[in-house]
Length: 178
Image (cartoon, rainbow, N blue to C red; front, side, top):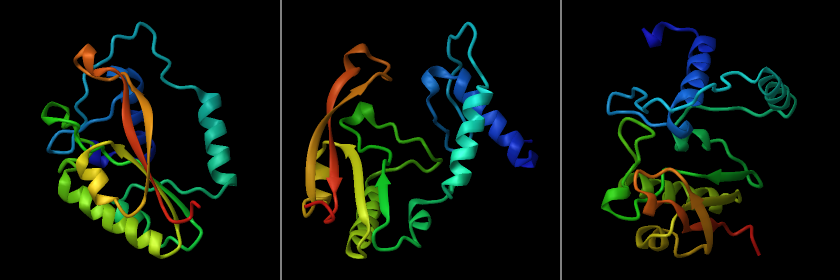
């Protein structure tokens, strides 16, 4: 059973699945189980020991913490001057692009509104807040009081070829930016 495994075993399993699944995609079903099909790799590099060791050393010396929490809990103790970047599941561009299955409950409009509320509170607290998301009417409306910058981004994971390539996204910049 997965829940009886040690933290090291869970991390090793996650790395294995990430390196062998389709395009390194992370997705879960409604029960919270990983559900990405296998990729078509002849010889995937599962473990790059040097890269893992370097990442470990950097994270330790830089006093960086990796959290597995809701976004509200992850930023609850943020202080003025802290830089916070949000890269949430993006608002769907249309009904067929509604993938938000990074968590069992998904990430819909209700969560987008809650994220906006947290963003506003952090900005008012004096945190340096930046968020990326789809360029949709909902996102532009939610963040209309902030500076919104349109950027072009490449997308390569899509079941349909016409859905791949460059598209517009937005960066929402907090008040710290002049």
